[in-house]
Length: 147
Image (cartoon, rainbow, N blue to C red; front, side, top):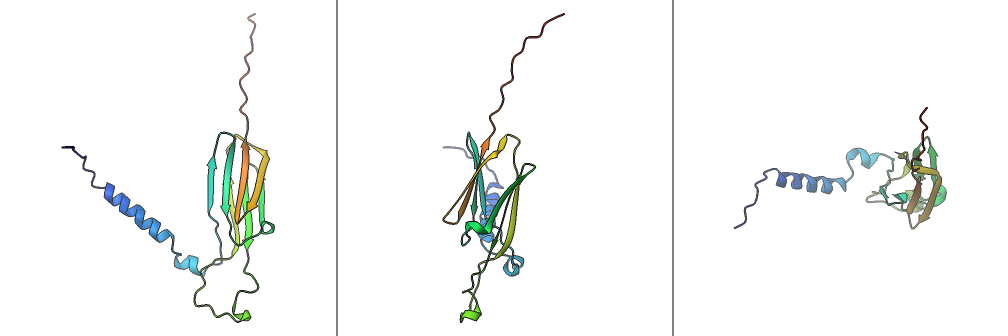
């Protein structure tokens, strides 16, 4: 017979996590009526680069701007309503859940990146930004003479 350590709060933590995930999918009342848009972003790294993937469906690359100033990467843009959406074109909405508006997302970059080597690509509503890591300088050995 295997003994299992009793952890009374483990199930509560799991329940809390599942409830948060469930409610994160629904807009709060302040989000429902606001015109702010916050794209989701994934950030990861490998040996040579730091990668940012920004989810911006329904936008074109001309609506996006990327800048770097003092080691802060800023992604700004605006998700606009198309002219064919709305009652003026004969549509009566029962529900409208999509959000529109301007956004700015800023991220402090680590010191070991080369801000001169940034690539950005936009494909199928995903903006991919790659920043090369700087090659760390090896300490040079020097011989010191004794006087």
